[in-house]
Length: 298
Image (cartoon, rainbow, N blue to C red; front, side, top):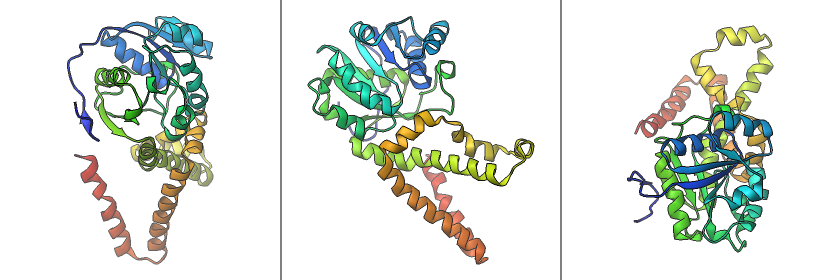
């Protein structure tokens, strides 16, 4: 099987059921467990989380079958999924690799990859780790936000595949298959560049727009009454929690700053066109932006 940049996995599952431990029972980890359990891919789902309320909620929602502490959960799993904020993943991943055997696989689901990859590059069990990023999320968090069909048709990225054992890589590819995702392969460096352009700038823009409206429009009732679907969809990401996004911006700072500078430049062009009443330029800027439709509608 050739692994290119845009390989789509959709094949019949021939893999036996697995014991899977997920560290961090939130939106992503919970949604993965629901989907994999629905596909009968999991013989046992083990939850590990420092938040006892999340563990209880996940048990009640049948996202997991049992809870465990870190070492016990790792020891009893064929696959360990680290689904924590990227700041925690960077610290936690080496500890997870410390506690696995040669037949176990570890994957993360973080939105940044370079600093996480750097944290484990010299680890003796690095070859059992697969860097994975499912390109899906919502502004909600916690086990109650988990959705069973969240990932279908979405992109997923495996980074630095050549550093992982073939069987570990195959396990994660099978996970992507069960989640019904498009698989892409790239380096950690390329991943962080592309996600800054596609995902991270979108969140900063949403936060900035929300702050702009909150600063200029002091009457909350007016915001609520006049908010159109366009406004609501544009600021939806501003509901996302800082506990998740500050570490992402921190770990991917240079790439985010690069795209943010370009975004500010584009805003200045719109500002200048209005100030100078250059409506031909304004139309040109909008028509150029319309080109994104042809890309997204493919």
